[in-house]
Image 1 (cartoon, rainbow, N blue to C red):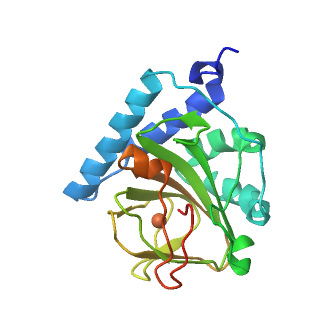
Image 2 (tube, rainbow, N blue to C red):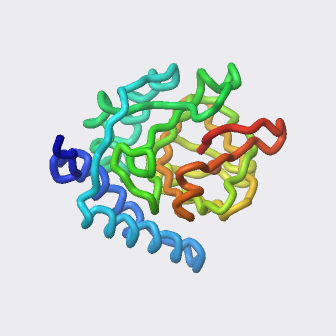
Length: 224
Ligand SMILES: [Fe+2]
């Protein structure tokens, strides 16, 4: 069977283009580390797109938190992140929302899920970069964790969130978590929060992130 390629699915190509714009046009706020990260993500993404990678779909899947997805899209329609939000909304029926945990903490299972767009596990295949979205319900606490060898950034598409209780971040804000840096996320009272994420690091680590929550010391297969 002939493998499915990115050019066979223009809507997925458009979403990746929106990701590229997100990492091209936003400000680095004067931070050399963030400027370098943004460049690494968009250069890697450009190379991946140029290679016309294979697309391998999993079964579409929803989680309880995806009941908040429509509201997240509505909020994005009011801000400058509408382009990426709309491109994702068009792909909604095809998305595979997941937890990544061996056993999901009960409270978190109702309030959180993520979907990869590009990465070692697909749908768009890449060994060098992982891109996706994480959705949080209002009033979520995502426990403290870190990522070994992986440099991670979040950009808010809609909703407000805080990391390590240090500031409130609005749509368009970027946070860089360098390898090993501990972070804990909380979201606002009334609205969901949709974050785009990028992970960059060694291919074998992207394929098996093996992260764990710092406080409960519980190993998980994958977490955002
Ligand atoms: Fe993280």
